[in-house]
Image (cartoon, rainbow, N blue to C red; front, side, top):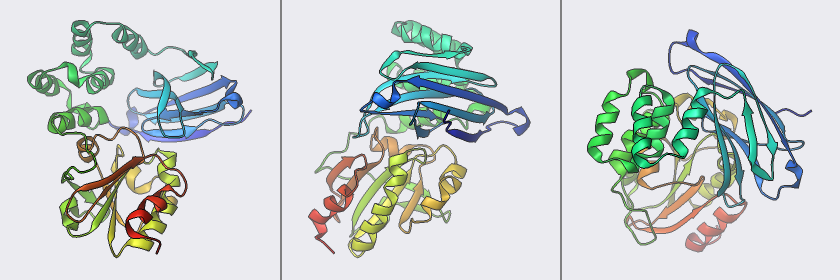
Length: 326
C-alpha cells in the first residue's frame, strides 16, 4: 500500500489545545482517470497517484476542511467532495470515477450542518450561519455565501465572530470581501488596480512602485503544486527580461510561516519581488479563482495579457510575444 504522508501544523489557539487528526484515503479506479485527483487540506493540495491510497496527518487547534478534487489540466475543478475533520482517525473511501460514492467515516458533526445548509433555502441558510457564527463551520459558510447578505448584515455578523477565530482564513476573506466586492473583474485593456503588501524583508511594496516597467503579477499559494512547478520557468523568464520586466509574486498563504518556510528549497529560486497577501486583498481585488494566475501590465498601467494555470513553456512563449527572444 502506498501512502502520501503529510504533516501540517494548524494551531490557531494555545498549542496545548492542538489535536492530531489522521485521514486515510482509499479511492478505487484512480489509474483509469484522465483528470488528476487531489487531496486538499488547509490550502495545501497533493496529487493522489498509484493505487489511490494516501494518509494525511494534521495537528490542529480546531476542525479543518478536507477535500477530494478532480482537476483538469487547465486548473479547472470539475468535481469536489469536502468533509470536516478533527481530533480523530477518519477513512475516506469511494470510486474515483463517481464522486457521489465518496464517503467519510466517522462523520464529524460539522458535516451534518454542511449537509443541512446545502439543501436549505436562503432564509434558512442565514439561520444556520447565525446559529453557528461562533464556530469555524459557521464562519466558513459565511465566507462562502457573502453575496446573500447586505453590507450591514455582514458587518453585524463579523462583529459577533469570537476573537479566537480572527486568525482564520474565513474571517479574513469575509472582511476582504467587503473591501473588494465592488471591484470589476480585470480584463485586457483595463487599468491595473494598485495594492500594498508585505515583502520578505518586511517592507511594504505597492504595485505602483514599479511604474515605467512592464509588470507580471503572478498569483500563487504554497499548496498549489503547479505554482511551485512554475518557479524555474518564472526564474528563467525574469533573467531573460528583467531589464524591461518586474515579476511580482503574490502568495495567498494562510500564515506567514507557510509563505516563508514551506517549500523553502523551491522558493530559494525567487530573486524577484515576492509578497504575502495576508488578508487575500490583492487576490480578491483581481478576482483570482484559479492558481497560478498571470496578469501582464504595461508601463502605462494597462493590462495587456491574462492567463492562468501552468503549462511548461507557455510563460516564456507569452512573454516572447512582447519582448522577443533574449
